[in-house]
Length: 250
Image 1 (spheres, rainbow, N blue to C red):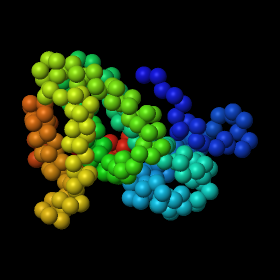
Image 2 (cartoon, rainbow, N blue to C red):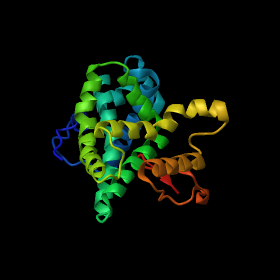
Image 3 (tube, rainbow, N blue to C red):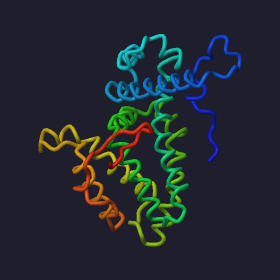
């Protein structure tokens, strides 16, 4: 899938005096880790406050970095917001690519199941992701149009032919494929959306591995007709965030 040059690639300010000289491996790694910390902090800041109320100084404070270091990597708030969106959706795309590489014999139905399960795992591990997107969906603003065109539609266009094919095979409910997709998105985001309320009304925690795993087993059975996850009571370590930004059932 052909991609345009991303904000993440364009946003970094050139290092003075570098002139194309390769960076030392430790310096490169430190830069990668700094940018990742900034993007994770930005995701939380934008999710909590929305674009207008969020500030680069507050994002810097979340990371313990100086304000100039954030603007060194991302020149302004708009560039940082776009880079954050690309970063979040990029983690999902990488996992989907991994499914294709490691599960060449996977059935069409199981591939779609796995793709939505990946989205659920990410949203469960990073509820800020859902809230980040929800902040922009309340108004028809330039950022929503940009993120829809740049990072959302390429993923949707990857899913819609699969959905239509499975509907033609009578393996999925019949409805507009795009409606089916957003139904699944709402299911993947349920714990992120209602987790805080559920904690008050039932004392259940959305990040409890038993809650998350049993919930997705129910979605699997309801939508795809069967459950393939191991029983949740075998979990010992629970849910955790990984360096790639996804949730693991460990």
